[in-house]
Length: 242
Ligand code: DC
Image (cartoon, rainbow, N blue to C red; front, side):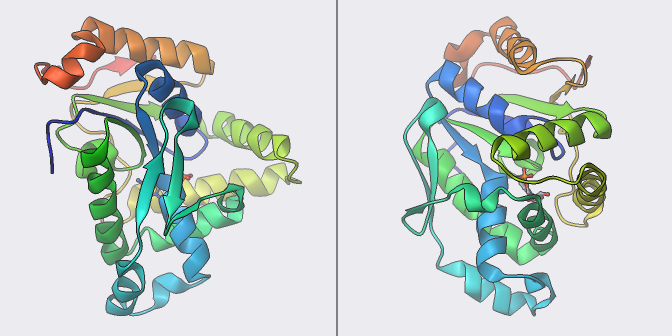
């Protein structure tokens, strides 16, 4: 991994607001942002239901030739898979569930980890997902772990889906989010967990602007965005912020 290019990591469970925050943060820093959930979703959609039940070697072969790249910076950064933009078709909650299932397969995680690190070598990155700080970019200078009560997250996800014109059954959505939480937190490989040196932010009572302000202030207090390129910052152990 090329440690010279700076990375900020944002990890946390479904519906916590990572994608919006990563976009805003990338905009503030004028960097690219990487939505790694979209990579798992894209793969899950292409491989189809029950793909996680296939022999692991077959899955590895099927994923091996895939390429991912990011075009553009800040809020406008867009993920491409095999040369095509990854669109809204991956955003449905059902695809999120397929993604959580395929994400339990170590060979799939390996293929995507390699692709994620490659993108981290190509441009300064705000990377969001589940294992960015702990597994994929352990040397990142700034790591954030966002969390919120499950009912708050279900409400946020519902708003997001409804804004895109999708019909949502609130009870079903809450159940899907809890099931996904359970899978993401309890899988054997790279379970959802904060890195020791991540700043924990409980976003239950904060809006996007307030969370962004907490994160940017933290970066500022520890040397500012310039220090990200210079690589001089050592963060304290995780501290709770709420
Ligand atoms: O962030 P998201 O909801 O788009 O992610 C969809 C699923 O992909 C998530 O439930 C688990 C998986 N995922 C993962 O295992 N590791 C990541 N870094 C990102 C997503």
